[in-house]
Length: 102
Image (cartoon, rainbow, N blue to C red; front, side, top):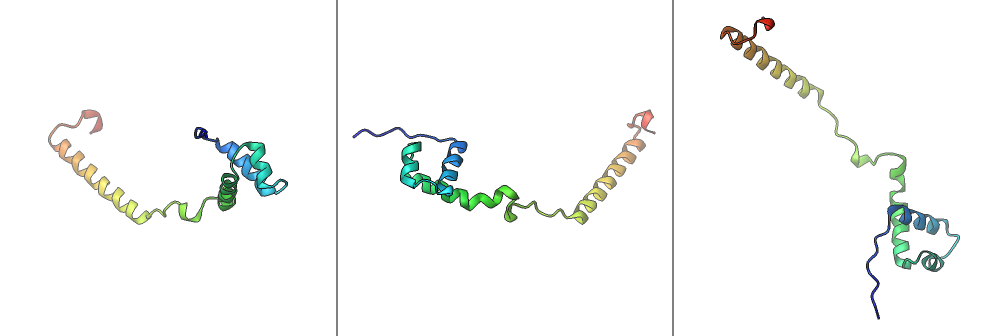
């Protein structure tokens, strides 16, 4: 008995086969013969399709972006502004700041 080499199916092919299985117009055995894929594989693809169908219409609730803490961002902006002002005045006192900036 010879083993068939492992095949990698495209996601479009998997979706087509899974949709055909969900429609139920043909049995898994008929789909298996038509697409040359094992019945168990078609069942797995159908289960994955049904499991992830809700993701098509919106992002998953667990994948939502984390809320931005505006207060922390404002505090950081304030710190950086103070540091820039301090460094600018230190350079200005040392005579190292270009004359266009004065």
